[in-house]
Length: 412
Image 1 (cartoon, one colour):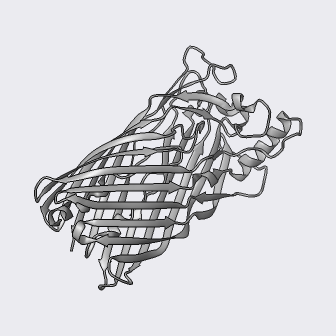
Image 2 (cartoon, one colour):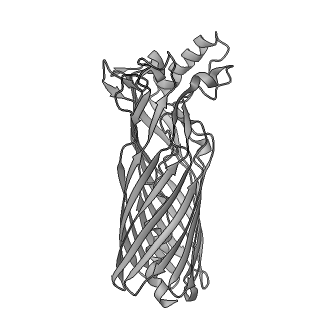
Image 3 (cartoon, helix red, strand yellow):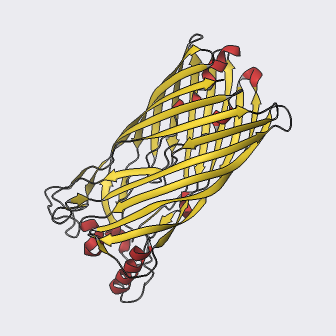
């Protein structure tokens, strides 16, 4: 299986770069830490989505019934990852992994229907931008041959900006802005790996903890501060996850690899304090005091599951190719208007070029087909009779995306 080793460093060049309502983008791979000897790599992923929809033709949503198109709402974006693994001795390894695990970049363009855009005061559309960064510090210990236990702290930063515009958000929230100021917290990861070099086999099970925040939020409506409460911090929780990675040589020049991933989005929710207070007032008025608990700015109802299976083929000592297919469950339908993407299917192709045995350049692309979805506002799941049909606002059908990846790796 000697020639198959040239493929192994490039197997995650086509990462789990999902663009879904749950914001999962990097896949949080642990594979660089399983490389032989001392190793470092750098990667870049660029994603170009096409996400368009049509608003429901209702008087409360549409100012111009002749124009129901919402335009392309998803912006192109990119993210980076970096890894360093050092073999301290025969039993102990040290590693640093940097990635940008969760993110969102969404802007509804200005449209005459005014459903998700406001054309008079701000002249802006509803928008969401979420950015995160992770630094994972790992120590791996091999108690006996082929097995390794690893774990360590994870430093994470998060910041976000959300703006609500248009008829879909009612007069009360049209013009609402929430600036979640940059904050950092610490979580942890732990895992177990098993390797058999003779057959190029690697298997790993990795758990990452949830990370909780009390994050300061600046809330206003058309730049006028909201002062329903003195509180200015929101509780936020990035989700726990489990990754199962597996790869093995099946012939002297062919590699099989796979990844299974679970992300616990079901417990994720966003409800800034001023938003929550105003929502409580609105639900109390609408229901004549029968329901007073308000609603969330955003939340997910189901956990996300994804699976990837791929094959690598080593053409010669310098050049190899990859192909893979993946599916993603998304987080349920209907979806939030702040993330109008449901499940997905994808295929990818890639290459790996070794100018010398100890370093490589790899690249590839992946094409996604998104499942059809209906979007809803935060009132959809309230225990109020008839609220579901009113909360459903738009339909997103036949959307897609393409991602491009480039990675360089070096063993020293």
